[in-house]
Image: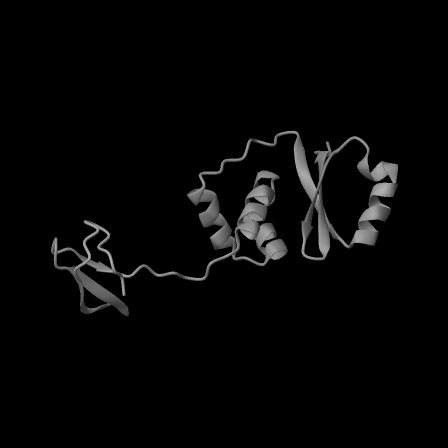
Length: 138
């Protein structure tokens, strides 16, 4: 049970019924009714940060969903929550690959793969994601 009122910080709290399957409380100090906050499923900040990075790199919500394994709706809500706006990418678009360590080393070893493009590598569990920017083909 809550031990402080969210409105007045008073400590005289009593149970006062159930609303939408949540316990309702009444503060005897200020007569304010409130319910306990739903904790929900907490997602590690690591994945939130990765999702925001990938969004800024130009990936779509659904692409991020497939890579991280978090709903595209959740990704969208994080973008709104943190007020993230990505700059327009008029000349470049991201191309990404998911590689194991040995595949990543082989890929980078070939100069043609990394020549004339921006490149970022980020880790996901036991794999690596390589994001590369290429000019749109005309």
